[in-house]
Length: 462
Image (cartoon, rainbow, N blue to C red):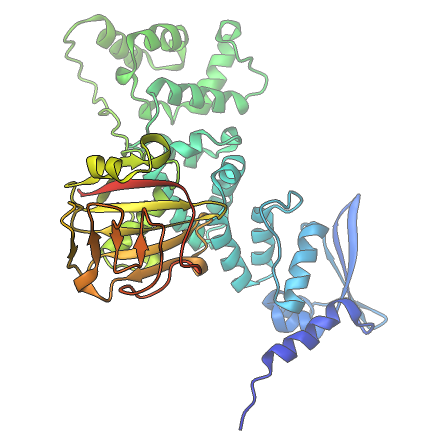
């Protein structure tokens, strides 16, 4: 008979983190004036980290009186303390409110110490961070991905983000820190939902940040200033779609700084705005075609990507790069009303729909997908494709619930009154009842819920 006592083993080893007195490694971490010395056991470090397995070998390790002495100036003490605790205990504890901890620096340090599982976990954690966090850290993160090619999870996520929502990068507080290659990738995107003159303004501001001696007002620019700025942004200029600016933007924003452009390009742009039906030989780029923006105050496109995967019966780890469904808002409770009559007037006979309910006092949404239609037939609609869901607002995949229909004969309660919903009682929207009957799982712990707001989207296949 074999008894599994791994939890006890981990608990006992964890005690060494705080209580042991037989350390044989001294780690000096950080740089002046922020240096801290940590004590550790070589056997633990070497067992948990390939980096320390090599660094503390008899061939590499430096010892003094039988103690390995090790310096790590490029990692801050705050970061190293978290990593050392993880090495000893397997626990990783930090959250978005911990302003002293930079998740990006933590990821770089975890990778350097060959803590592979932790590095993967931090990448997934970063992906789930809030929009506010991204607006403060997005460019630093993008530059990190470009510099450290091993962060495959983040690379795939931000490749998708560059395609799906490139506008968010223009909103980042640290936009001017964007490296040139990433800036080029961004302004090449056809689906930017931003005026062309704003892209030009951002490129100029980015160029000025790399030439701090040049003043922001073009009136003060010297010939040397023009030459330096043109040299900085010259690779960006071919990707600016000048002829898709307004005449006013051209006159007030481009014409005063045409010395940044080649004479040929300057002449062609001027001809376009001055001469009607001008037939230029310049191969102009077409207008940008921004992706449809999701109109919602409850969810964002990450949720609709999840819905699309579920509709196509794909796993969450296979999120589609190009979403083949669009989601048109039909009703928002806080805007249109929470009564059944409003639902009937706005949502009946619209084809497939998704209902999303924001729960009062909870950081999650619940809802369901009706692949057929609502019509008030007072009958159950038979389908095998409907589903219910519960999604935390931080999109933690371990807490996402997908509940597919198992009782297809009662999949959709197509009521004309208060009993609109899914299953026999699995989710009644207006009765606020949620008791599992015809779907795989409960989507909430209680049998009823309080609704803060709700939205209904028409699901349209491209």
